[in-house]
Length: 187
Image (cartoon, rainbow, N blue to C red; front, side, top):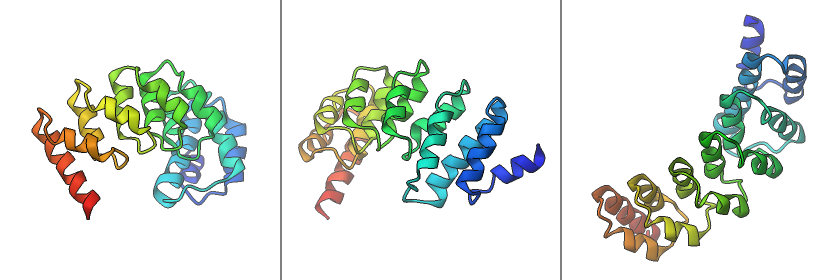
């Protein structure tokens, strides 16, 4: 197990080898979680531009069926996760999985629209996603939760008029971030 763990810590491990390990150990939660972590690291640390690979997509879809929440979290936030898998995870019973789908810039607008009326943690994820449609960002700018408004103020897709409105928010931190975003927009 130690050798396998060491192997799975290598983000340069061949993706086909990773798939073989998954198939051999798919009933072992610890190994499945290590595979999810390997994929997460290879797409967020090693490669700023996520690798596009059919094998990677297949593994992510397989991992999305895991009973382990941490594994599903890794899949939900991964920009290489296929759209159909994100659609499935958008219905996950665990709110953090849905929240991570909401933060995923690869999530299509129809999934993001579904999260608009979800619970706070999911709206929070939605508010920071640059793919969230402007009409939802404008509405979420009135959210009673200051963290949602703060993320709207720092979201690069927030329309200028919404940022101007947030410059007068009741929370000073939201005001500061909105003003900074407006300054960055003009520079």
